[in-house]
Image 1 (tube, one colour):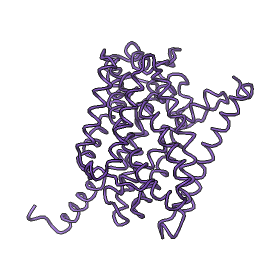
Image 2 (tube, helix red, strand yellow; image 1 turned 30 degrees about the vertical axis):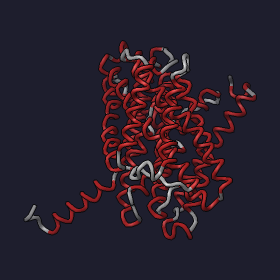
Image 3 (cartoon, one colour; image 1 turned 90 degrees about the vertical axis):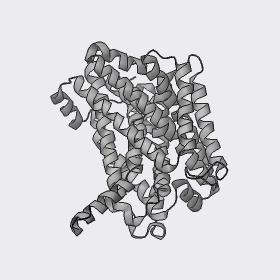
Image 4 (tube, helix red, strand yellow; image 1 turned 120 degrees about the vertical axis):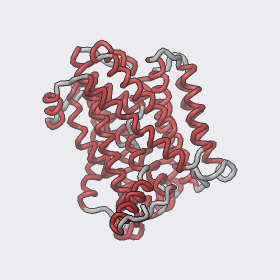
Length: 421
């Protein structure tokens, strides 16, 4: 090390800087593949086959654009999204947005603990043991950890998502057929299919992600000078997340759906893989579900604590002690207690909780995106870092698409004949 050339030292310094700055983008994009997301993608593949696989390319592009905007807002302004909404749109609008996101996040948190319950029961462990234990673990990790230490745990958890690509290869799908489904769009006007598309968008680009990632960028101290590395962090995270989604849908489509079966619970998806794709594939699928559930059960309450305390103007952050930011930690704890407790109600429909929470995400997403787009295009706020024309086209396209799907779903529910169902 003492005899490194100036060029080698420069490269080493750049690598150290990149490693120091990565985290928010990779973590946020991968939490996207949480228990509710896995349930949604399993439903998509198990019940609709490969017909939804074509959505992953446009949705992946939208994911990168939205997460890049979120990170840029945080790096340039040094403020979280809820902070900016309050300062630029007033307390009244902030209250209603935070209320909607908080309610949706509670449903999402329930979905994560539902995933823990389902994953544990696949291995023969009662939910009444697994869920309280998991709740205690995720609470302890966050309450007792600094941002730097918690981020290391989260990054390590991201590696376990490799279970899904591995299970995908073990399932041995027809790759030519899968490839055609990726590039050839298919459409059905039926309400169930439309709801599934909304769910896919909602779980891939969930509203809470924008609040969490922007808060994490600010917490990490990332500025405009370092932003190009954070942009790389976002890109890598999005690509990895969409690869995982691809394999989940492909596995369930080419095994469960191809045999004429239907997924009625998340257990069905994993259990059906045992005879159809082998015990190793099924075990990896279940391990991935448990990892994703624990991972997201930590992040979602944390995202909610950030957004509420930002919006109201309270102290927040993992590097603050309880007495410095009591509201932040109380909100986090309350979300875990409610999310875990409600899932333990006898007869709770676990898969429906996970799936419907993602549909709620999809319906709320346009509201959050519109506010972000207004903020990021204000020169007084962003300076030279406002959106390009291409970014605005893509972002508004996402708003119109999701709003249109939500409207069509509402119309087909009121007038079932229009959807053919």
